[in-house]
Image 1: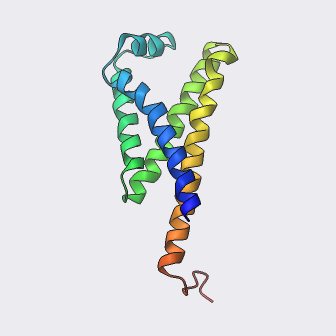
Image 2: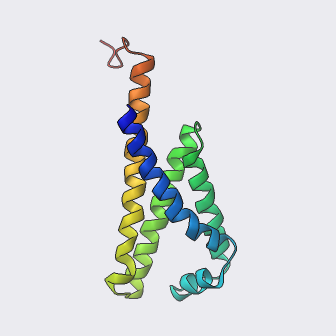
Length: 135
């Protein structure tokens, strides 16, 4: 369980750092963030909304408890990243502009998978002699 916990926090920490920095720039409507999003054809008012939404998603993943909110946060971050990749591809951007999005997607997937591994090991530690299959 210790190894699983370490791997989970590596994925989750890198994810929070990588997406968190960009989210702060979005939330405060930094000129670079506004230029980036408007170049893809989106309105300026969307930038702070996305920034705050990503920050709340990261916070939901980092705070213990609230399993349903955490599931929605993982889904929301994945949708955001997939939508960003789709926007770049639709705009005709070269692959060098959107291939990096696979890195945070990998981090979201890794954090999600290891989150569920941790839940499974925690449940089996709490209820070691209980069969969940009903037999």
